[in-house]
Image (cartoon, rainbow, N blue to C red; front, side, top):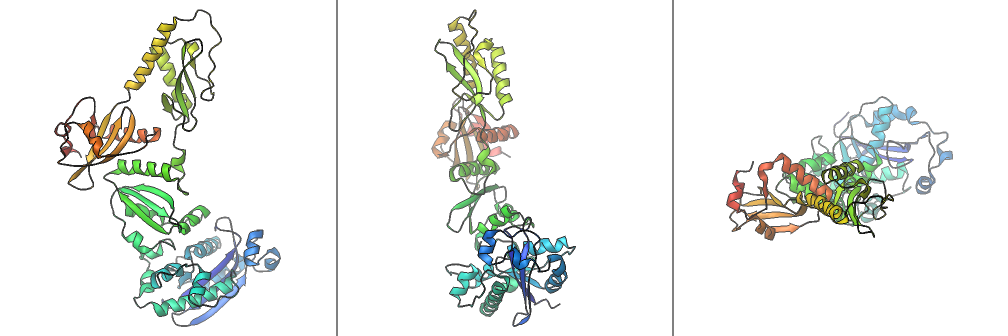
Length: 469
């Protein structure tokens, strides 16, 4: 088959993803780059119910496809028309995912070159108000009959394709259909320039919707490589297809190292609450260690659930971690077990023990509680995590104060600083959290040479940051 031939395809389906839905109609128009050579279309019995919203959109219902061939019966024809030709469609990855999935179910291995007419139109005719097929047809005066039916949409896409070939004076389509072309993998609505400007450095990247709203935030040691990985593979899940379709832009923030990228990512997710970020939204601890004083004057320690925005002495991911910590404190400071609560109760609802026989001396008991709390507070150190900067003329600093993340930033290598606490002048403030402190602590353990305690005045020369790995 001639390498310059194209198969322009449109399908209708029972739903939005190839894994759980099926094709109900398919149309294929064969084009040689100048003229239409062949055309074929058919209804397809999906062997599953067609939802009412799909019928409302396409006019295709169960009765219409009842006597239509199943995809198994037309697979030979579909494969024969597609094999050896460039697969062309408007938002190509949607149509491609369905056709590829159903051909694979019939035993066909098929890996064509692809061309997305959304991406091609954006490149060849930039600046149009919308690149949906209907709006493009209106903007470019292309006839569109039988909208949302495979035949009508395929015919309109074929006319659009012919016009794009005519207007393509820079040979963009030829570049886009090469197997090695980045356009083979980029989402349909993402400008190539956004991807091309991505650096190969550590940092944070942002995906934007058509409304310029952040829909995903990610971190990377190599921003360009990590972003490209989002667009590779052939996953047919509805979540991934919707995700790629929603990406209309990318921006990035360069960071000096992986830790700073992780901290910025976490902060941005908590602040922006992007649509497609899920893991870090559920990263906060579920249990806390509390201290309170009852009406009888005795102080109590308790482990319980940690509601959102509730403060506690110490937070834990799992209940048993808090329980173990409380038992260790009680044993170490000889705290009467009656004043420790390990139950699975809500914060603020701790019930004092009812057994009041032979209570300890209240002043001695409360002093023991205060000593236990002081030990916990003593473990909350202040230190600076110093590392290389984004370039040779600066250094980076992650600052922890009293066991909480204070902030991070960059300072010049020739900064005149008497002691490390003065680095706070160069630092941007960020919100601390249990998850953030776990991240910082893990890096501090792995790179102890970069951790400089702030217990006394320590100059930058004493910190010796020039020798960091």
